[in-house]
Length: 288
Ligand SMILES: [Zn+2]
Image (cartoon, rainbow, N blue to C red; front, side, top):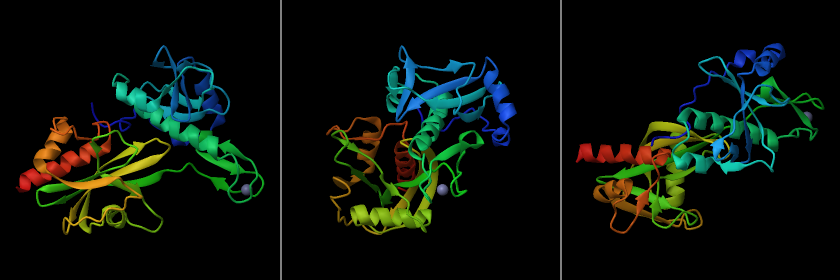
């Protein structure tokens, strides 16, 4: 199992989003594919992702072209269809990694349309344009674009120890990297420093980028970082997190491998937290 949602096979082919002739042609071809989503759920058939071939409903979002030049679209699913959570599909581990990435794009795009039907400037109803990559307001002329919300997620190290935290809503025993939404006007490094100070009272420096991951619940981009702490003093904000602790490198290894004697464990390999905790552990081990 590896990081989910990062292996889309699609060329987004933005140059044809404005060509309704070309899109209609693509949609009419029997080989075109359409997935359907409703919130975090995906339409399935006997547990498998349902892919509708052929004619594409008006108002579908154009996702892109695969390596065979087959066009992929996404549309809202109806509540009465068989639905499976996108997280459950990911956890089951048998869905194709490319298809999961397509579903991530579909979930974020269809979700954006479902919640942005009205103009934020004047309140009038808006219409889909650019095959789903814009909504236009005929009332005031404003254009609205799909959003991506950046989130910083960071493993914090000091010497041979690593700081991880947990939220009350998580299953017992799970610890992960601290994380939080970036705020307007911040750099990524400033957001890392602010979140770690707010949640754990720890001052960090030298934040370095490791990797990123689209996280379609509904449309985040997880920016994975490793940062160094000035000290191990903790002042936890319990309104934000349930707990935060420094773990030894031995414990971190056990938590990644799920062999910790107290049944503590780190995030699943599908999530970027696992990747950055692993990267930080390698850094600690190579330094020590
Ligand atoms: Zn408007």
